[in-house]
Image 1 (cartoon, rainbow over the protein chains, first blue to last red):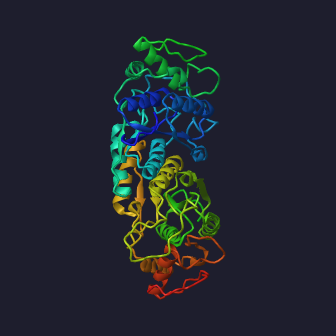
Image 2: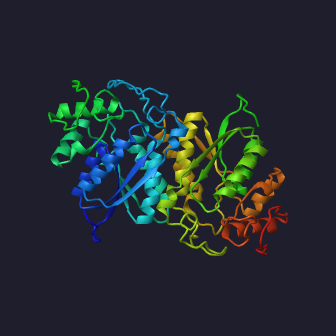
Image 3: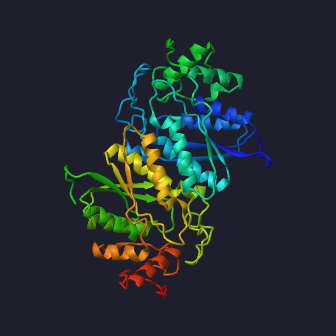
Length: 232
Length: 232
């Protein structure tokens, strides 16, 4: 997607995971120009995610890219994603506990950066693949949080009306897989696993949610896994 | 101030400028334990501000410190504070224009970090020396913005009720100088100038606002200046 001056510019948060890739594909279907923001917050899996980010941008012809390092979240700690001393939880999909992979207030940090960038490049939409999935339990993935953040943007910027679009917010993982399949998302380029290696582990929360989504949608996940358990 | 477990813990945003030093002194007068957060966002004056930060922490016996580099704001640009290609404005105190030193949505970036840290160290108050001073014109220094941000925190964190205290928000620079004087703030340790050198320039917006405040309060600013103009 080359820059077309008649189209509106939107920033898509592109982690490299499958949800953000579905978001990018959805945004393309809405006839938006896209700029892609990738956040490195010191997570274990950064090198795999960054590789996916570049491959997905290339796939969608996204040329305006920004990679931001907020590895201060590693210093702040409090999460197994950033603190190497905390063991990554094995998946417990039916639990209501906040998983140890929770980074406190992560999405607010990310949206603040996205808004600063949007002010400069004159984007008026931020697109984020947040999902209020059962069992994930992150408070900053609820639509209520994004509504509050839109108000913060309008009160904290100069005459700016920025919308935060969350096209996946009410979808189940199964529905995200189905939507991505309809949109021809290159799932093989995405990376969801919380541990980093050549193949996805198949056992962490994120792999388990992804695999269950594909299994429920009866669609084959083209990613390579060490273990493919039955999560249905 | 050593850590007293019976006292409530608060995070004070400590840039090294005089407003944040007055905030720290005010917080001490409120019998709070203090943790200090210093943000390096790639501004020209960082080395002077960091030196002031450490000296002010030492003065107030603040032992819990966090220094966070968000110089991604330099990459995002759009401001003379971070973009070396934009010339720093000479002070125009009566102008309603947004000064070129504006970093888009800076305070939201800073508060997001402070909130993540507060979640981990269990602080329930953030103290920031924002001032709705005539002529400064930054939209993210208005109390309305901080009220919105409190709502974002309550919707984006886990059962957390964090207050954002802005003790200086309605004060004029003159009143901040007077309050600081009453509280015995070590003004000689603080740094406000937007240009970096041994002596403050005396001509940028920040120097002009500071000097005018001291002149109106009829109190001597112990800082060394290249030029001391009459701003009254």
